[in-house]
Image (cartoon, rainbow, N blue to C red; front, side, top):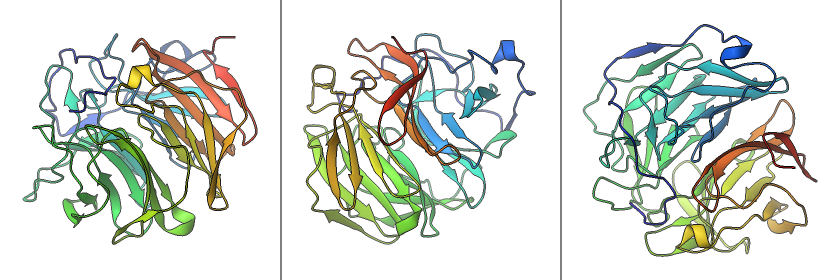
Length: 337
């Protein structure tokens, strides 16, 4: 896979064997909720709004790996551990919330003891994780480094970008509709990893920015209308990979951090960009330190962008939580002051 990935070497675990994994009972403050509780330090995690708060999925600590993937939620009261008996942990996987079916979908990823991706589809229904049955269609060619996103055009959850077991980055767009995967488009943005991908329900679009194509860091901007991709001519942040990207309920698109060159750890930045009214502008604000692959999401209940974790310039996983109100960043938890 792309040499610019900040992901450290995986450590041992097993591949999924059970069909359904029940979540634990509601955690006590000492086991994962209440004042001071927060997820493990991690990069490459995903924030998804589930109607109540922001779910933090695919947060796998590679320094202190757990036997199963944990699922956390952040709301106005702080962090809560929702499940600690999830699927076996994998890295560079994809996950997205389907608001029509009220499930979190996770696909693919690399096991901690292998560089061969696992093309499994899992769903979390708010209580249990369940591995979805294999289907006649094998699913997306890419099963690591892809991004998943909800398509507001009725296609379910999309898988965009990523690579196959041979390291080939793909251009396919696939959709999961609760029973199987099917191919929607073969043409579109060039194959890539570490790209930004968000759903814009207000305009019935999916938006993609940047990424890494195996040679260069990209600065292209694309939209998906439910049936095809179109490239947008909007000058913006420039080449960017491993960045955080999220969209508000008023369609303000926020982009932060990442890398500007193929040597990602040597080209890290900490800038904040906002797309409003059809144009990008760099904001003169101080906020989270330069980092790769943070989780960034928008909490519709609080009207705030939230950032968690990522990798620092030494490849160390971070565990700080920040919020952005459209004007300024503020430390919420675990930040250096």
